[in-house]
Image (cartoon, rainbow, N blue to C red; front, side, top):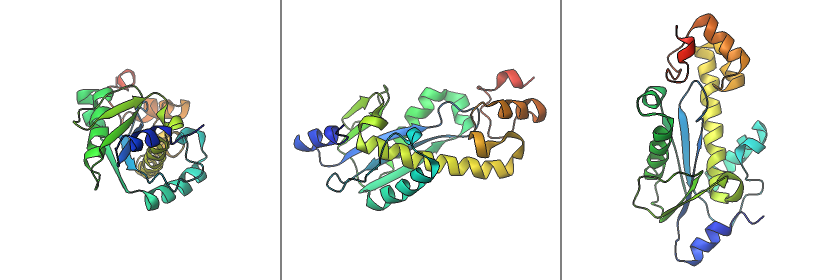
Length: 199
C-alpha cells in the first residue's frame, strides 16, 4: 500500500504543505480528546508509520520522537472534559482538530482529515475514512496524539488512582467502572458520558 499516494497527488497539483490531522480519545469516559496536526516531508519517509492502534506502546513512542524531529511542523491540542460536556464529543473533536491545524508554525495549504467529518476552516480539505491506515501524514498525526494522550492519562493515574487510568487510559473497562461505583466521579470524568454512575 502506498501511504504517500494522497500526499503525492496533492503535491503534484501544487499543494506544498499537506497536513494530516487525527484525534485520540473520542470514546473514553475520562480525560480530554487530543488532536495532532502534522506536515511531514514526503522525501524522507519514516518506516513503520501506521494507525497508532496497530502499534505497541514502545514502537509508538520511538516513532513519535522520529516524527517530531522530521516534521516540517506539528501541533498537539486538547479539549477538556468540561467543554466536551458542553458542546458534545463530535463538536469538541472538530474544534480540537481546527485548533491543532491553526497552531502549526507553517500554515498548510491542504488538510487530510481522518474519519468522515469536515472542519470549519478555509483551507482546502479532504476526509479519509481510516485515514490513519491509508495516509502517511494522518498516521503520523495519530501516533503523536496517542503518545501524548497516553502520557497524560498516566499522569492522571497518579492524581486519581481509584480508576486504573494507567491501564485503561480513561476507557470504560470493568476496573474503571468498578472505580466509578466505588469512588464516584473525579474532575476529569466526562459527566455526559458517566450519567448512570452519578446517582
